[in-house]
Image (cartoon, rainbow, N blue to C red):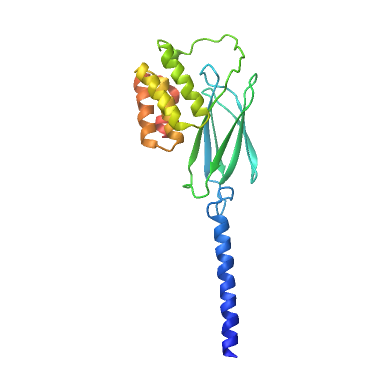
Amino acid sequence: MKGRAFYFFALAIAAVLFCSLQYRAQGVGDRNRAADGGDGTYGVQGRVYLPNGKPAINAKIYINSADSIAVTTVTDLNGMFQVGSLRAGNYSIVISVEGFPSERETVIIDRFAPAGRTFPIAVHFRSQGRREPEQTVDPKFQGVPKHAVDKYTEGVEKLRQNDLKAAVALFDEAIAAHANFAAAYYEKGTAHLKANSLDKALEAFVKAVSIDQEYFEAKYSVGYT
């Protein structure tokens, strides 16, 4: 009788352990599952640019997740936006600017990310053959050789595609062609920031500011990084 009772007791313990392991396996590594407690401490910060390199003012931002209520906002005078109180999960971000096809970005907030972390993105709209009215040369490109600008443009496209390694290499080529190319240093910093290489990002942002003391976005990024 004692042996039978012990047998059933052992089975019960095994069942509890199995269920516990199954529960843990379901949660570990599941980036779509909200963090335990769902405290909503994460944020997303972005910068939106027009094809001519100027900031996109009042661009409409729509942030949606299957597990959260949609959030909407607009960019400020510097083409920047920031939202907070987000939970872990997969977020689809749609950016709309009048006269251009919408751009879409995906941000994955891992539930094991440090609480309070803000995830940065950079969005570059493409003209796709559309001629902008009253388009002028961006001051950041004045005096920059065409070869350097071409490499910079290619780097921005790679950055938009999230090919960070290729983007950094192209920005380095642009800088090699024009040593005082502040915009190339800034975008290089953005690529390093997206890759979470904070020391390299900070170095690039500081260099951009040292070249152009009025470079607001670079100054902001120094403080943010």
